[in-house]
Length: 512
Ligand SMILES: *[C@@H]1O[C@H](CO)[C@@H](O)[C@H](O)[C@H]1NC(C)=O
Ligand SMILES: *[C@@H]1O[C@H](CO)[C@@H](O)[C@H](O)[C@H]1NC(C)=O
Ligand SMILES: *[C@@H]1O[C@H](CO)[C@@H](O)[C@H](O)[C@H]1NC(C)=O
Ligand SMILES: *[C@@H]1O[C@H](CO)[C@@H](O)[C@H](O)[C@H]1NC(C)=O
Ligand SMILES: *[C@@H]1O[C@H](CO)[C@@H](O)[C@H](O)[C@H]1NC(C)=O
Image (cartoon, rainbow, N blue to C red):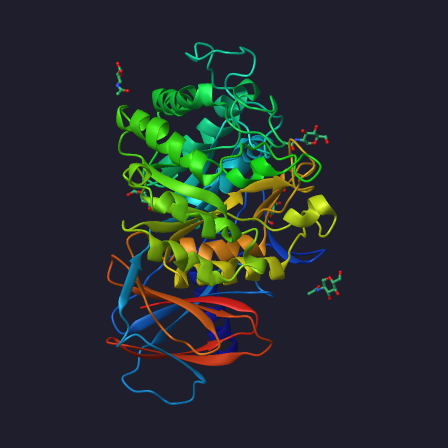
């Protein structure tokens, strides 16, 4: 009897903690490729609060079999027990780059899909990405006009050929209905800490040599200045509606503008780096400097890794470089390009530049029928995110920004035949949304490796990890086990020794 009462007592105590300390747990559902957490208008899982005291560590875990952030606490010891195969030693590690942030993109398609949910479900979705109970994104990208993830191809001045003064420049429904309202809500949820950067896919067709949104096309020389002023107009119109930007990239994937439509129908505009030097140094740079947006951080490249060897053409041009702050990279060629390419620009640039991952998604080979767009519940796709972020951070990246935050079950909508995957998928028929393994992978970085954290250089043998010292004084160590076996990891720091068991196929963050 006493035993039974004790059991009931502990059961009640445990459910109290689950509800009040550990938040809402994942409503896990078995789907085609693995598991997702299901959210709707009345329920969504939250991240258990960080609550670390002296002498205690807190471990957050997401595994292929159990999504969500399950958490346990343990005691920091003074000595090693010597049982761990893997050792992470922070007592001798040197500080490296400072974290700037993590996030995703407010594409037109993302807003359209959010808009399709009930307003309570929308709140749960935005809270999941930006709120204190969510993964607290702080760095997001906004397309300037249409991208492939829009409802159609468009710019802000399509119909008035030769409008050099941009008299007819106007934001479109996608901005007013599907981007700005959600950006503002996200910013409120993040207590005004959200940093935004903008990228353009294509100029109005009449400014281009091919008079089209996609295909082999370049900016006509006579519109170089108009195209720079178009950027300022964009920032002005968003500013009028209460949206401020931190940064801008010079052109989304400029090398797409060399591809015929047979290969890519993605809205694009070609710039080789000589053309970019001319436009940046004589038009975009001076025009931004002479505007109220003169403190925007300008990022060059904004394309995949394989074309980085061409970047010295810009890096060695001081007229361009006076306007440049960072290098933006996409992940699409990472499989065929050594990660050492990420170090090239630090060698050839006289100026200190930051490196930022600005676009990535799974399922992009769907357009070539080589993979599915959405693979609902795929753990393998979450692992690709983790591996890529850890690699970029090892090469000095200060952040990593995902592509569409929200797509529908088909991986769209998409203005062309190029549907892909996203960390959150909406179910149009049930009004639910699914948080995929990729969402939790992003969350292990964005939630715990907070802005202004100092990255520490660590060697961890075969496991993969990132360790930081956060501005609140806590250490956060992310440990990724892509193996088939559970193992033990020992973390040694000036606060003592932590020994944790790391499950197979798991992402773990240890805070202390
Ligand atoms: C999930 O579904 C797959 C096939 O649909 C099945 O093989 C697996 O056992 C299921 N897992 C659980 C935990 O129900
Ligand atoms: C929402 O999800 C919760 C938890 O799974 C469930 O109890 C509730 O019935 C769902 N509500 C609706 C409206 O489907
Ligand atoms: C929901 O599905 C309908 C029918 O397929 C489609 O017309 C509509 O655009 C979809 N809405 C969203 C938000 O995806
Ligand atoms: C925003 O501020 C409120 C009030 O201080 C706080 O409760 C909440 O946790 C903060 N949200 C985030 C994302 O930090
Ligand atoms: C700077 O901007 C003002 C208007 O804001 C304009 O009159 C002036 O010509 C610009 N100067 C340059 C060098 O672009």
